[in-house]
Image 1: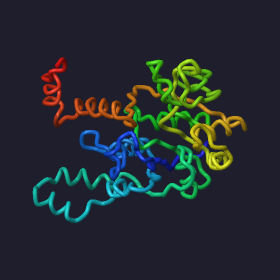
Image 2: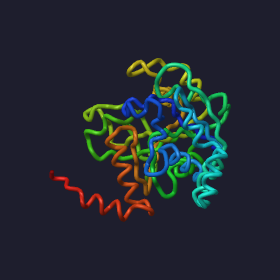
Image 3: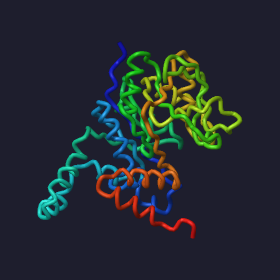
Image 4: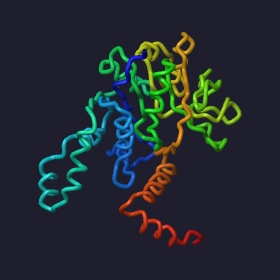
Length: 295
C-alpha cells in the first residue's frame, strides 16, 4: 500500500522576465485569467484532487500571492457588505478557506529543482505532489487525481504527460522516451529537457505536475548544475531512475493544457477562458467577431 499523498508544492519564486515590465512588482503567478489569477486555477485543481495542505515556494516581490490567499481585509469586507455584493464577498472569503497554505522562501541556486528542495522541511519523509504556478490543465477528472490513481497502483514517480502536436514546439518542454504500460500510462526510460525536434524521442511532454518520493530531496542535493548552470528537477528524477525508482508518465485524459508562461500563450488562454466565462462570453464573442483583423 503506497503512502497517501497529502501535500502539494507550488514553486512560485521565478522572476517572470518574459512579462517585464508588468512583473517588476506583480508575480507572474498573479496575472489574471479574466477574474482569477493563474495560481488560483492551480490551487483549485489540487483541492479538487483531495489535498488540503499546499506549500507555496516564493521569492522576492511575491507578497501578493500570500495576500490573495489570506482572509480578506476588514475594509474590503465592509465595502462589499455595504454595496450588497454578498455573492462576491462569499467568493472572496472562500479563497482563503480552500486549503491550508504554507509559505516558504526559496534559497540557493537558480533552477526549477531549487524550489522543490526548499520545501523539504515542510514535506518531511512522505511523497508529495508538485505543480508549477504559471500553467494549468483543465480536465475531468482533475489531472492530479488521475496521477494519484496511477501512483496508488504503481508507486514510484508519476509525471503528467501532454502530447505536443507541433514539432517545432518540442524544444519548449521535457520530452520523454517511453514504453507503454497500459492505456495512457507509460514507463519513462529517460527525459530530455528542451530537446531540438530532431533529438526528441517522442512527442509526449512530461511536465507541469509530479508525484515525487521524499528521496527526491537527496537527489537534488547531489545533482550537478545542468543546462544554463541551473539545478534541474529532471536531473534529480533521472538520478533516482538510475537507482531503480520507476518513473511513469500519465497522458492526461479529457484535458486541455493552458501554458501561461509566455505572452502569446497567456493571451490565448485569456481569450479562450473569456469565451467560456458565463458573465461575458456572449458579448466578448461578438466583440471578437466585429474586429477588423484584415486591416
